[in-house]
Image 1 (cartoon, rainbow, N blue to C red):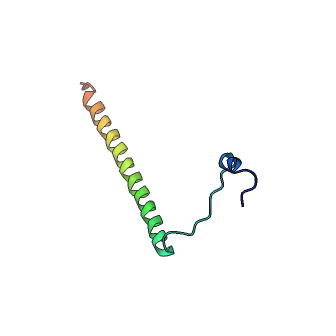
Image 2 (cartoon, rainbow, N blue to C red; image 1 turned 120 degrees about the horizontal axis):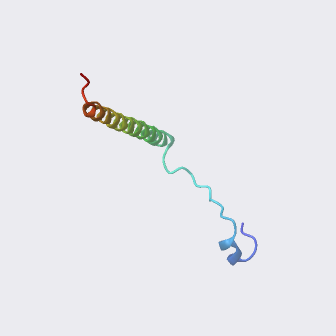
Image 3 (tube, one colour; image 1 turned 90 degrees about the horizontal axis):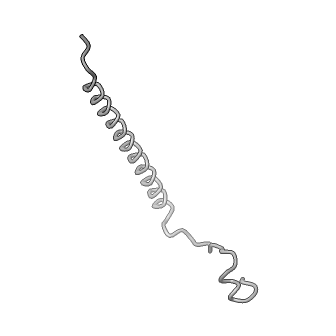
Length: 69
């Protein structure tokens, strides 16, 4: 219930309305599993990319070193 004038209600503290879940529990769980899987795949891809860059830069540095006789 809103107390005071309607103008005050518009500019007062924001309260989130409680809403029932839109998806049944099993579908919500599937969404959470999908989200976690995407995060894991993204982290692995990022790690591989940085590792590949590191290896490539090491290769370039090794090739650039003058040979010692």
